[in-house]
Image (cartoon, rainbow, N blue to C red; front, side, top):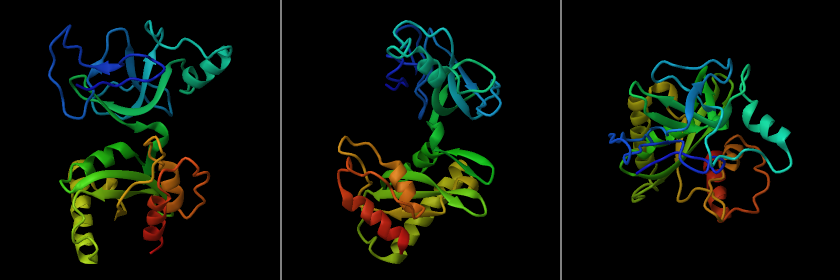
Length: 248
């Protein structure tokens, strides 16, 4: 069972309501738009609705929102409108701030947050879709992908992966072999444009004590910048390992 929702909506936006109508699950998809939601994919640059299958866009919802959804911000209606309803040019529509696609059968696939989308040589790629591709390798337990500034392509993807079995990976040749396998997998599933520039193998990803990935800190370290406030980080050694690998 899978679904897609937000704290602001209070209940699923995308799911398969098999209690109403039996539908087939599709790997990687939370399902279709739940009754009451008028879900659309929108081009975030033009505000135009994307109607063709497999086009990438912002997952948005036409008003009015169904019962149970947040209706305003306490004592700040203007903030509610400006934050959720005014970010897409030329129209007033609720933005989830998530990037997704819809296949020919109406199934949605969430690709990640709009601010986690990277621009590689003019191609907009969701870090989540690259992460899912890498995670499908049998020896990858967990992975984080960030966009790193590149003089030629604008940005390139860089991956930090936790292997299921690290036996032998202290050997450079073994690491290069696994890195090559991961890159070939991304090539096959998403195309060469999504291939990470590097795949670093780490023992743990830097996270907060509540388990949230410190993606911004990862990106900053990968670009040689100050990662900022790290007071919520659970294990400082995880980020230090990343810093050492990138600098090597």
